[in-house]
Figure 1: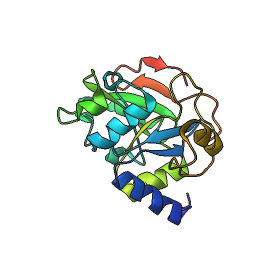
Figure 2: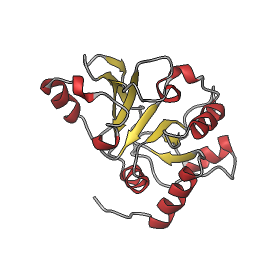
Figure 3: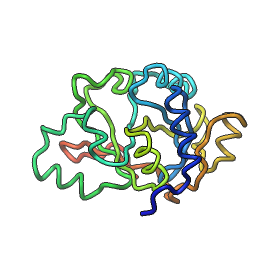
Amino acid sequence: MKNNLHPKAIAEAVAILKNQLVLAYPTEAVFGVGCDPDSETAVNRLLELKQRPVEKGLILIAANFEQLTPYINDGVLTPAQREAIFARWPGPVTFVFPAKATTPRWLTGRFDSLAVRVTDHPLVVELCQAYGKPLVSTSANLTTLPPCRTADEVRAQFGDDFPILEGATGGRQNPSEIRDALTGEQFRQG
């Protein structure tokens, strides 16, 4: 995989995240909106933008599994469960893990778990590596409108001044599959 695909754009995106703002970026299927998962201010901005209740919880997207370990309790996994997860990562499969007790409620919502994904989208991998941690990730769309698949659709829904990391989505038609990390149960088909 190429590194530094868009160094100036990545640096600008990192600056936006450090300023506790929300950013749109391409993922495997649609554009996502995300922010710093450790900033309650940023997450509240994202929730307000999406008109999404905090109780629903959020997804974190990361460049690698190590970026997720501060938030999830992976010590409860059996070797077989771990193998099943890593057989699907990196890729468009989100797994729901038990959350660490220290994981903020603004991420987990009403749950004691957290949905996480190790992405294979090169631009998002590069962004997470440059930022040094995962991002909150939810589809870029206003309530009742379809998810955005292009930067132009993001601008149409969120305005011309909304920060966007330009790039192409991965071309998938469906959002990421969601599964329970412990049981393998499918919550959402991908």
